[in-house]
Length: 171
Image (cartoon, rainbow, N blue to C red; front, side, top):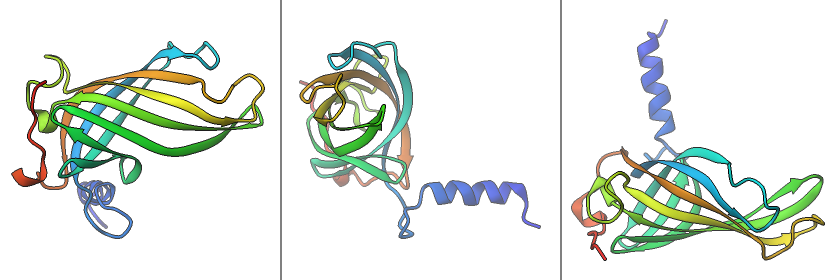
């Protein structure tokens, strides 16, 4: 019988490992996303959800993921992080809607200082743009925005070499 403590370690290692067996890497941020503005249907601004984003840097290029699921690519310039998702599709009330997420944030990379606020390491906005809609009450071109804020939560995998993390520059 395998001790429960080893099962936990194995499960944790599985979470940090991609499907191809490579260890996931990147800065982890515990974020709260709060509805800010809804020009599509007018509701949902009281919506709140929490996610842990994994941001993996390759010089100034980056990917944004939740776990091993990469959902956006972008860049960082000093403290300014910008990213854009793939186009998503889902059914709402039996009607297909497609949307894309764009985000921008002031980020304290690796929990540093000087970019975001005193209380947060990530302060930004995500905007959902409806790109196509068969729903009669949701028009293409409408947007829904979320305020995004949170804290650096450590690293997925080993901490990066200093050469792998862009140097923050307060602006």
